[in-house]
Length: 447
Image (tube, rainbow, N blue to C red; front, side, top):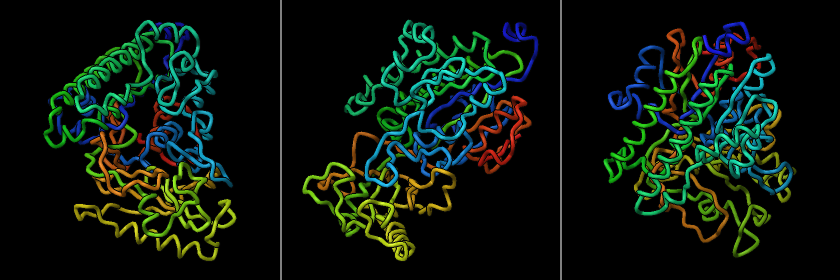
């Protein structure tokens, strides 16, 4: 029993959640000897591949994982979303997440939560015990609450994120060093606050894994130049998870999970360029810079990753597709996407998901009409520069995947069967003996 247990006079069950952004289950399960600590969690508890969400993009995934709700309820569909009734776009931040976070449910029960480095949580909430916002935060100075947390982390050389621009360099040495520095400080911070032993829910995310995967995953998967450096980085992550597990107070269940999987990237696919070539999209200017530059001849446009919007009359300011035409137009676009082939002759799109099959809730008015899930190797982009080619390559050699998402639960009573991200939040509450209604979530407890 830890100090906080003694002070509060009870032994309510606790949960520590460690996120490993973008880590595929196959990487961990196929290299058990290299990652003994995660293998031990699987042996002592349970582990399996789960599904991500549609679309499998971190800005949408983490709000869904932390609320147990689909984007129609969270209101966040990706790194960029559009304003209702306009062509204006914005980058969703923490305040745009409309569903209740799992740590808010914990706090509402009079218990305490420490939340660190979770993407899409800026600015930090002041109704939790302590919070350090993650991805999209401008810097530590404004991302940490309360002030003593900021001061403590500054002394650890804590950084919100690795510098992704270093990954664009042909020589990845500086990028790899920066990734190690970032994950070292993240572990030190997590370990420090876990040992404070004053929380009921600890929720921390290693996002550097996603960054490393974007620039080195093909090296791992196809025996490239930096394969050993990739594996060495992950050996360190596994070691840190093992050390955090050992530091956990009694009566605490550890959950380790990713928000999506990963695979090698062969081609970037610029879908607005494709839509323009196919006659779906046109611009009022020769040098378009934003969505508002589309012409009133446009029938469809795209956002990353693989989100497609019909330019619908009455919904979009210059919509040209009528309600009566909507179903036929959407079906036509869906069939063209399903038939698209890449430069190597492979199908680009694995499947196309219709809006009503993926999204439901009070905030589905900005939902995409179609979401294309890529065939492995094709990463979907959607800029608004007319000169872009359709198929291209860039500095990244790894991309997100819908499948191959990781979930480890240090409890043998958990059953991971056809699970997805929506199941994690209710599982956390179940482990903590916090009551909730089954209808409050799109997922269900795995206990």
